[in-house]
Image (cartoon, rainbow, N blue to C red; front, side):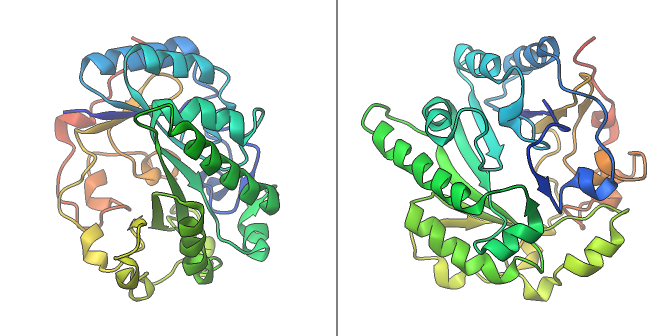
Length: 300
């Protein structure tokens, strides 16, 4: 049963240039434009009836730049759903404080992308980010959460999300220390994922599984650590996909996908019925998409 949906609201609209971005890896835009509000609203209402509890605005691009974001906030409140937001931490247009006041009461989790701790790492992996402002933003965002805690019974969790590659591998522990200092609820450490057309980038940045992060010494600290970069790797080479049949992705044109593997949307090869056999996220996945592969068209 579906419990969560992702709207690719504005995959081509972002204010930063991240080195591992799938659109940068493929060297051209997604090309479907920004999602019209009519499609976004119809999708949310349709799948709310089917039982979803969370809505994720664009995981490509910067979701806070979506033209109709305030309408999406209002719709989520109306339907008693929760937002689940991944933002790059620049908090464009409104700033960290205003966004915190809007998002914290209506979200389940706010994941802030984190490319590392040192300025050198950020300069290599996230062109356009003012690192000192980024850190100031995070402190202000957490401060607002503390202020709002007296007014609301439930507020969103705040997570740092790090795609780990060779350039930022040495910053992992410093990021964890910083997350503890800030009072974040969680850090997601995911292995960097590379498209088939980004072989040179993969050779330069991919980390072998034997060097994945061992979080054992952090287990008794008040910080949840998750992600595909953790040992043992076998945990992430599971046989059953945790997404299939439980989550759905709605593209800007209203068509839907049942699979989060970026190769299916951004890679060189068209998605096919054997995509589970070639899954980039869960290599031992043996489950087949079969009838669920058939695309529903929200706009129809």
